[in-house]
Amino acid sequence: MKKLSLLILSVAVAVSAMAGVNSRGNAYRPMDKMKSATALNAPSRVDIITEQPEGTVVNYLRTGEYLMSSLYGYDTDYQTGRVKIVYADDGKTVYIQDILCYAEGTGVWAVGELSEDGQTISVPLGQYVAYNEEYGYGVILSWGTTDVIDLGDDFYWLDFIADDRATEVTYAVDNENGIITMLGSDGSLENPFPYNCVATGLAGLWSDDGSVATIEWGSTWTMVADATPAVPANPEVLEFFDSGDETGYTRLDFNINLVDVDGNPLDPDCLTYSIFTDEDQLFTFDYATYGANNGFDTDMTEIPYAYSGYDFYLRRIYFYRTNEGDNPMFTWRIGMQLNYTVEGVTNKSDIVYLEVYPHPSAVNEVNAGKSVAGVRYFNMAGQEMAQPSGLTIQVTTYSDGTTSAAKVQF
Image (cartoon, rainbow, N blue to C red; front, top):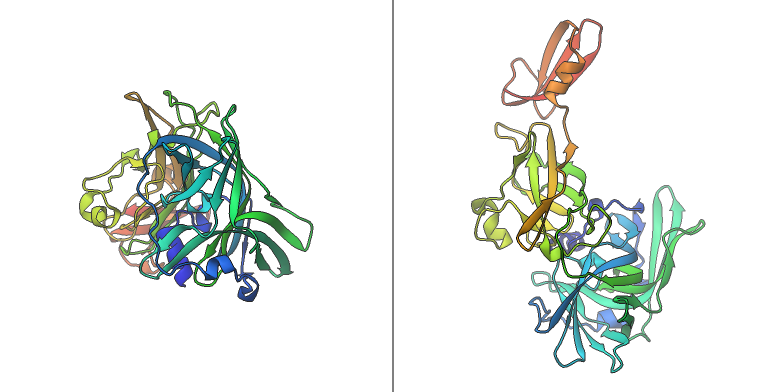
C-alpha cells in the first residue's frame, strides 16, 4: 500500500478523481520488465525545487494524452491543466513546473536548457517530480514505451520498457504562436484487442523499483495570454464519499477545465474555488481544523487552483467531517463554484451541485395527495430504530404501496 499512500500524499491526481476515457481495474505490473537504469541509479536523497526560481514566468495550458497506473489498475485520459515555465535571465536555463500532468499540484520544478536558437528545450531525465521524505523515494522522469494487454475478466497486463539510451526529453518551441510540443512521442488511447493502449513518451517511474506511475504522449503546451476579466466555465462535481467518521477521508472529487464560458484559456493563478452545501451555504475550511496540516494560517473559503496540502489536491478535497451523527456537513447536496479575479474584478461560475441524498421537500412534493400508511426509521448503519434520533433515514410507505426515503435531521 505504500505507493498508494505516496500517490495520495505527494501527487495531485488520484485514479478515482478522474473522469477517465478508459479506466480499468486489476492491472498486473511485471516489475522484472520495468527495471530502468535511470530509476535504479537515482539518488536516495534529493533536493527537489519547490520555490519558484528567478526569471520571466509564462503560463501554458496542456493538451495530449496520458496513462496513469496505480495499485487498482490504470486510467487513460486527455491531459488538462497548466504548465508554468520560468525563463532565467541567462537566456539558457528554463524551469518547468509540473512537467507531467500526473504531478500537477506538487509544485516541483524540473530544470531544462533552451537551445541557442531558442527553438528547442531539452530536459534531462532522472529528475524528481515528486518525493516523499518519510518513505525515501519518489517519482522520476524517464522515457520509454508502455502497452496494456486485456487478459479478460477485467484483468490487464501493464508493461513498460524504459529506453536506457535516452538521456533527455526534447520539446520544440514555436515562438511565433507560443506553442511548445514534445518530440518523439506517439500513442493512442484505444487499440484493437488485445492491446488496449500502446504509447511511447515521457514517463514517471517510482525510484525504488522502476515501476511506471504514468506516461504521457502528444504533449502540447499553448501559451496563455495576459489575463483579462472573464467568466469561468462551470466545474464538474464528480463524486462524494463519506468515511462515516472524522478521520479526514471523507472526500469530494471534481474537475476544473481552465477555460471561460467561450472556451478561451484562463490564467490559473487568477482562479479559486469555493464549496457550498444545501441552500447555497458557503463552506469554511477553518484554521483550527485544517490549518496545521495544510499550511494556511486563517480560515479559508476560496481555495487557489492547484493549491496543494495534506487535504487539498488538484481534483480532490478531503474533509474532517461526516454526514453521520448530529452535525452533518449537509442534508442533501454539495457543490462547487469557481472565482476568477483579474484587476480587482471577480467573475463567478454557477454553483454546480452533486445531489448525494434525496431532497426532503422534493420527496414531499412527489408524494403529495397520497395518504401515509406507515413510517419506519433507520440509522446511518441501516439499523431500524423505534424512534428517530439525530441524522435518520426516514422510509415512508403510502396507501398505494409505493415508498420514499429521505435523510432527515431530528
